[in-house]
Image (cartoon, rainbow, N blue to C red; front, side):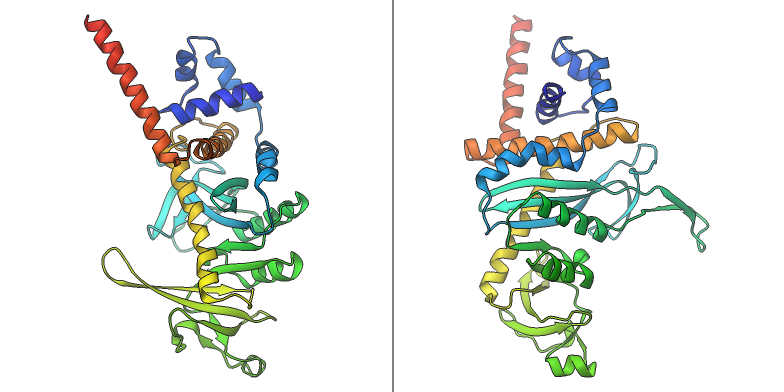
Length: 350
């Protein structure tokens, strides 16, 4: 099975089109049959635990207490594939609407310039119900993405993964997540937070129930403010970043940090590492064929998702070896394939 996984992941890295069992068999000139690839995808079960076992040795080589654990989810759009428990409708915040596809929550371990996926969960929505307003059949999960995040943190604890900070966007900045990370796991967090969240500026204000919206505070940019977030028993640092968007409009990012000893520069520098998971999501969509498999069952679709994540890990190892990023590596493969195709055409013409 490990040999087939290695071959399949090399294939999806090398491919620039749909990744099918037939095409892989043709590529290998029948050395591995179409049926072998199909059985591999349909009979195996590659879970998050298997991912950890696959990356563990590399993690142990680079791990240290300054590492950060980054959580974020992404949607792989599959508009033309039949709906099931994992391919269904999810709200995409970047587009402001629901899209049909697979929603994946990833945990990435970052140490300096190394980014290793250490856990993932595919969002399952097995419960079907009728929406009262629209009377349309919809789906929901048995557990929330926040529940899955906490479970992944527990698994990371069991795996003895050393890190100092958990980084998330505002979707995961719930009071419960903050409590779990700080009090139960005894780690710190830096999270983006929405401007309408309520905070008190002193312990006395908190006790008296005097809370204000974050965007109503007279908070200076590039500074920190000790606040008490509503629902939290401990204080956090609040920061405000003001930046220019591509369209020249002004953007504001609020961050909360549970390590009250950090400076503004330290908070923003650490949080900047969260961008690595965005690059990872772009890589699995552009470089490891995550949306290019015509698999039809929940099992084969899940296994292809795992293979794509594992292939991105292999690209990360190549990045470290050759000191070049995933996209440059993929471009190099494309040029080599183009050169081989061009040379073959010249031979045929001759």
